[in-house]
Length: 250
Length: 254
Image: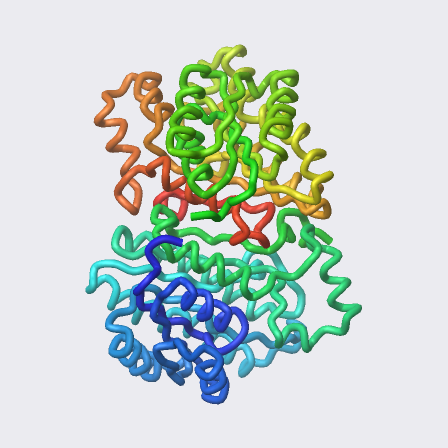
């Protein structure tokens, strides 16, 4: 990927799963990487695993004050933030009829409001410095319906629309894109599956497998690079073909 | 630069524009490239230029709408370059007319090149790829396969069909480890875009200025589109299938 060496990259939700794999990939591309996560223990563990990280920041993306303080620290550590991977998210598995108001608020606060807080803070910095790339983690759940995650899905659809609107307002200085992963086999996801459950889900994916977190990281690297310099306002689906057919390919 | 080392790619419409830029890029990334085009002079020139920079290229003269030509292109590619790992279905033409002023002949030709060509090429390439344990197909659709455009009725219809053909093929051939995706370029500085000024009876500078009127304030370079094709052809996209990749400077975002 061209043009990533030496870039300052901030990754939210960067201490585990997709975020951690993305941190590792950007380090391979010789970028300078800071990870932001609300889990201090996960931050300690990722900084041990990836000693080349420029820094780890502990903050809750749903808290604007914490976001602003952490972002300022990221700018201090990196010199400037050229690339934001706006990736932090949570989900709760629950039937629509049972979602409590507190659960709804918690999910929306991280998955949509938090994405906005981080995106706006970073965008102001990038517009001032003249350029930048913002990449946000949406989901195929933001495009097609999916049982038991109505609140999460609504937020991810919101992230897609936020992405397109941001792209229009921030062009041509800042490019903004979203990615929409399908099933990703993070360690956390694998722990929730029996072998039989994993097999059953794999069967309905045309490529016959879950994404590895590294697959998603590679897409972030491409979109952040100069190879994608004409791509903005898009949501790139990375799902092994799952949503190319109806009812998520059955 | 070796993202495609050891791979063989067959590129249609390789004599000019996006196909030409992609042929150069794939060759520089280590692929042996077969170039298929109706334009013999242009196609041979691209093959020679690639060989001049130590790349491996083969030109096959033919028409994507003729089954016999397509069969020969696939056979020569596998026979002379040793396989077929990547098929880039890129040949395309445009007529800038409404339904009311499109001749039946023009309609048939646009659909034949832009849509039937993708079908014929894929029909011959899929069994080869399946036998080899997998492959990658990239189709050139267009932003006008996603949203409508004025005075380009046959083109829009053909490109919309390419988007859905891509999804259908991704479902059918995923189990054979064949990934199928399409690229949807916005206005790209190619001979085709410049031809359109003539078809529309517009001065070139006005036509090109309109094309650049997108959020990123410029038209795409063929190389921008070639990089997207390279991404889809490489291991970096190994979980992407059935998806349109839009490279349009923000045109369809608004």
